[in-house]
Image (cartoon, rainbow, N blue to C red):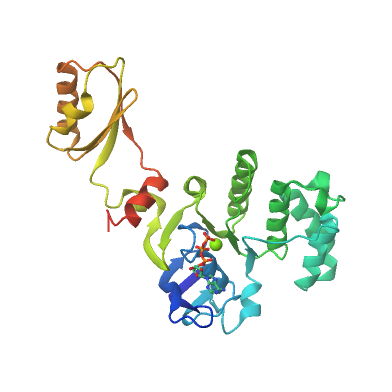
Length: 315
Ligand SMILES: Nc1ncnc2c1ncn2[C@@H]1O[C@H](COP(=O)(O)OP(=O)(O)OP(=O)(O)O)[C@@H](O)[C@H]1O
Ligand SMILES: [Mg+2]
């Protein structure tokens, strides 16, 4: 669905200063149909720049983007028929009613006149905005506005949705609703390309991710593969029923154990070794008199993966 080939964007520094900012540095990436693809990275990584090039809103300095086989730079209008784009900061027309707003964009996309009223109502239903259909946009909550923005992006029924930080500024309930909506759209066959630095949000819905920093892609692939990659060391957490046993110090002296960190009610540590060695270690801990009341492997979160990757630990 999306193909980036050595996509590069260089911004000149403000006049008078020498040098340039390499916001996207030879990005090569393939997003197959039917993926929910998450682009993760800190502020300034180049996510928005990349999205804008995918949507034909920024011209690349070098390289190429195709969407659904269409060269975005050569045929931007044709490509945009296949793309629904929601910008990170988008404005809605406060003095329009919800249905009028969608109707306006349906016309802007030059949709077939006869199909517009039906499509507007379908999108309103899909976005769960039926009760607000005839209300002014100014009276919508932030989460509703976000859904309306997504509704606008899909009004022309594009196969690809490109969403820049759609979860930003939403409360937990609106986030859950957003995730449900994206899953629903995915279920209806849409390919979704989404950015966020709220990694937990991507983790739940994305099929694949790429990690971006300083204009470069550090890692990409199926979510599970990226999470597993470079992970020969596992982390475990032990909780103790009572204080008084200096388990962190005790562990620090064992082979295979690294980074033993004391916590209020126990310890967590990194461990390199197979399950049999691990079982032996646990037996030893108990024999040594530590009042173990729980022992668990800590699952890797995207948060931790991200910090491992960007610190170069798994490069
Ligand atoms: N129009 C522009 N002119 C000059 N430099 C720009 C422009 N747009 C972005 N940049 C620079 O390019 C780099 C990447 O910015 P970009 O907005 O793509 O990052 P981002 O990953 O979307 O960040 P955020 O998480 O803050 O949205 C930054 O250093 C930024 O200052
Ligand atoms: Mg951005």
